[in-house]
Length: 189
Image: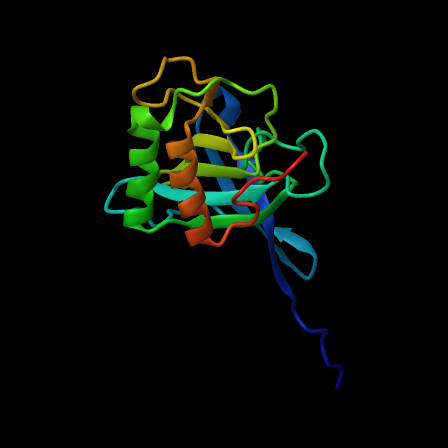
């Protein structure tokens, strides 16, 4: 009797169905499942949300050697996690998600001048019940700047770079450490 080889199942990063998140268009991330090395198509499924509110996720990226960032967003234009993501997604609970939303909605978070540096080490994504990324924010604690794919409440409609205040930095660093993400205090360049 011949024994068949064992079946291996591997779930790797992600594959995308959807347009560019930089343009604030929805992106659908679908897990890539392989059985004995062969990709098995898997329909996108629902994700757990917070009572119908978007699921909020935190990421760490660009934590390697100093230099230009590999990625500006935790989720790339093709929908896959950025190749330099080292941790994530970490799904935030209701209280943590509310703190992020309050941080972004508080005008005291912002107002400092922009730095010429922008090497984000952290990202935050919002995902609807269908798993579509609806918003991304990238944070560079080192230069106290952030960038969003859409308008941040209370700020100009241009979602470009925004400088954040010392108060905003303290609030983000506290949440970052609570989530167990690396380089919460930023890095020296």
